[in-house]
Image 1 (cartoon, helix red, strand yellow):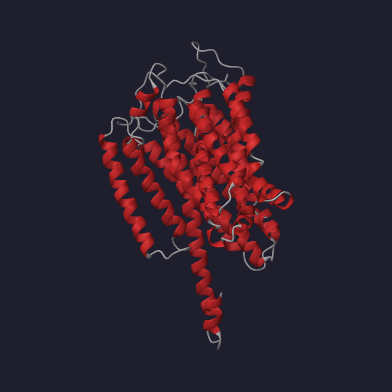
Image 2 (tube, rainbow, N blue to C red):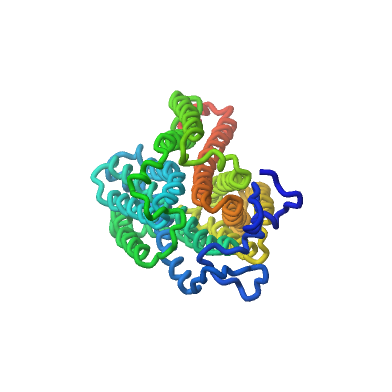
Length: 501
């Protein structure tokens, strides 16, 4: 649709009596969803819905606390396995497959991610959130009880499929429960719990592995997941606007675009395998990469054709080309890529330069994690008070570039430990982008498209993380090889040393 003549950042969320443009700004952010939180006493821009009474803040916080428990558990597990995967592989005498404990999780997470949005529109937010918890619980228990390496890897894939919904569904539910101008604030709380979980997951996994064995690092999570399932069942009450209560389950299943879902999942899986394997396990021009590239291309074509003719596409093409969804998803992808690469390489840098232990090297990530916490809160409250979400999306890339320039120019072989603080702007920028782009995408589409748009953004965030780690690792290894080759030139045993390293 054409944009209005005077459209600017403040018109990205137009009032209900105006037409929906491609990129609405925050005039509608002050118009709450149903049910709503009451506006701040000092917030003169906020309006209340006279037809639907707002729930008390206490009820909203109770609901949020229930949701945050699942977020913390899933994100703790995401980093916990990094502390135990070597012991798992060692016990089954299969060190070569150890990396698949992480890869299977990430691959399944990316493949399942875009499905949650559309399925939650058909079956309800609560039902899909419960499904994600059940999958995660089954995968966690399976990993702890597995008798073979293959079984652990399959269980990790089931965990990843569940984890995809545990985070995405919470953000979707938040957009249904609170006014749009509150969404960024509440997502900053989700970000705090997610960051805290990722930060302490490795420590918890290491301690449990040493004290009780690696199996208990998984099994001890199961009671907490079951508690989360019970709490969601009895404490999460919300109106399922998109669900037709009179529609039979069989009729809902008939509305699912299974062919499109198959092609979409195949495309994502092939792309993720290329990013995961390329440059690390196999060469970028190897036969495996070419085969996966062909599968990705053919599957993508199949998905597009299916989406053009399906009555209800699993991921409508109009959303992929929608200005708000496309631009915000692209920003999330790029920012996630750079931050993932930085997070990967910071510990490696300090292990090499400062001779830091694994635990000490991990501590150098604290400034980045701190920036992540502060950035989410700052962005959330800025959007709440001003109704402007473009500003954080402009400031964040500049902060990220400043972070990279500072690290590049000041981190050298004689670096002082305090300069690790230069990674703080990168974490700050990542959280700002996460909060503001989610609001921008949700505000720019109709309410019935919010769930699919949100799951698409989470998919791009996950793909960005995979791409950042893959490209960062490849660049690091290629640079290392080139430097080693120069260093051993002229030595009699130079070639032997080079190939040994």
